[in-house]
Length: 474
Image (cartoon, rainbow, N blue to C red; front, side, top):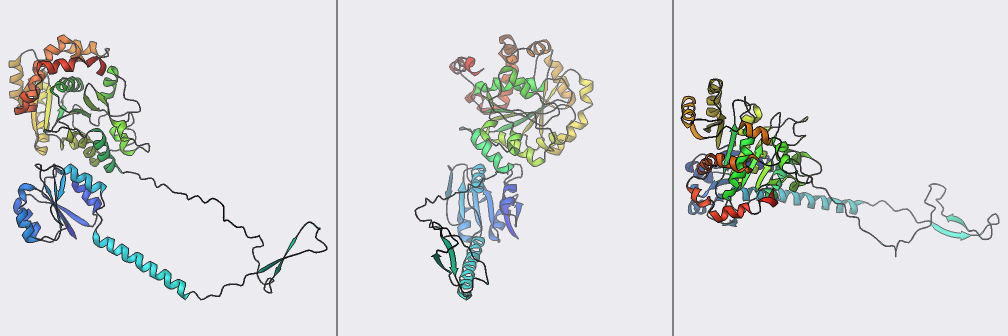
């Protein structure tokens, strides 16, 4: 069995291993965890190796003269290039994924066998024609005669054939088709894309951002209900847009989806909009219909039919999360309380988990074992956000007792949120509420951007520019 080696982690592979398995079903896909293992693989017999530039010495590769294809990932390059018969360089894995999905990577030996098979068939057909010595039947002689029983103006057909009594023939007059217009009929073959190919096309058409400088995917979850996870994410996303970042919000599978209903209070859904999941399997597939932009943020809510009669697989979840790989900040709206299978499958794709708690410390503390066990299984970093906070010292004490670092606190806005439920604009559009939320959101932005915070922090004129077109974007 031929071997394909991936010198990248399974998390970084972004499903490329599954693509290769489908493209080369007779090959075995293996992961390599060190530079030494890559060198061993190059010296062995292999079909393909995908490795970062740090683990490949091109000089060594040329001296070894490997028998397989080597794909090198070098972010310093732009696009893709060919360095020899078997050496290809890509600036990122996404570009290679597009090539492998769209270009003909059929094995050369298989192509030769295919040509041999066609040649053999052609020879057999020629031999069959040469050996076919069956005599052709004599053509019948057709004459026109007039008989007494036939009216004067009519003509009867008489077949002058000695063997006519032995076999019946076609008695119709021959029709000359010369001069008749001949129209070629072209049959258009409909290409039906599978979920994997549709995912790639949806991302390329809707979420292939021009600028890309870092990527963080954050899941937001609460162990207790009614802590305003969705409301927090919506207002934070709109706030972060002022930093000139690519922001996307994704709603994971939950029994009671709310993101779509909240967004349509502010503005109607785009005409003909369909959810990402629906686009994967619908017959009327139009990738551009998945796009939903509001206030400069990309939104991916669940659709009305996403949970009807469909059992989503881990592959479906993985494809869904791929949408966030190209944005700067991806915020994932996770269902509160016990983490079900779908939620656990989503955690595999997160960089951080933000846990929203309030003053209900006794009830929250009952979740400690569940939280720690879950985080341990996924090697996931967690931050705490304390909402309905009246005292920062109290929030620090809760974080310390729960054993998590405190990211920020949120003021108590229960009454304002209740009033906002009947309004047609986000909570943060109220100036007095924005003033209360801004310090907390600024701290979150500083955490997300790290050393790039000052670079992306908007100046006064940038903020004014954002405010001027606000009416048109609402």
